[in-house]
Image 1 (cartoon, rainbow, N blue to C red):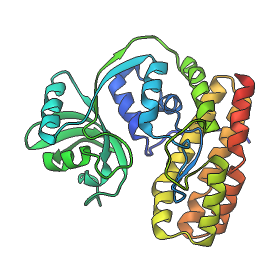
Image 2: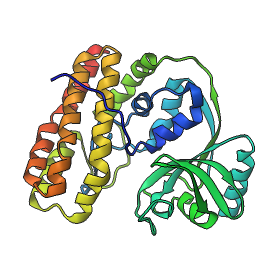
Image 3: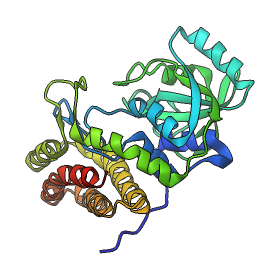
Length: 309
């Protein structure tokens, strides 16, 4: 079946935030995601928490490589006490919008239903700040959202997240090289192979699994008992973003001439996307079958990329 690219909303917060900072020179969010490395693998953190992204990966581990391959640079600051961080943010805003994250999404009370920490990471672009409120473009679908400073600082402390330093922000975005989207995709392939290989000490919690083993273990867990916390995580976030990443990987790899790798990524996108309805309606056996079909595709994708590199 022919691959067909996707355009639409979805949880692409850091790619969308980067695109806002790049402005008129921004590449597509699909290319930004490829540069960050997110589509290339699967992980089951601690044997319980699934993500359709590489084993041992979190967004910040891919940001510097991504900026370099895209031809951009920025300045990162983080840490300190809350008052110091807020002062730093106000000073930085004199030079324009500021890229912020990770933040705890549960403290972003402009989003309906958010009443406190939910251990979910997010990224935003802050436009204005004073002692009372913060104005931001929240790529979850809320342009010019306002938030009381206390809520924003609680979110920005990132104290309930499993990665990231408190009060991290990026400023001074500057384009240092003219790099085409196809050049960026090709430059990102070595990192994709490295992530798919799961090489090195990635500092994962005990019981963590990656790629095929993660898919098989998650299938067994869903088939035995998919509790509501796992189901909610899957249907509201993991499946949506996982399928989006894979479909974007397929489109980008095809553009760069990696035909076999693109075909495999498209297969991954179809399998991940096909889990949404069964999981929503409780047909867990069907979702488990899709995961088992997905399991071997990670080694297949790595091999295809290696053979063409």
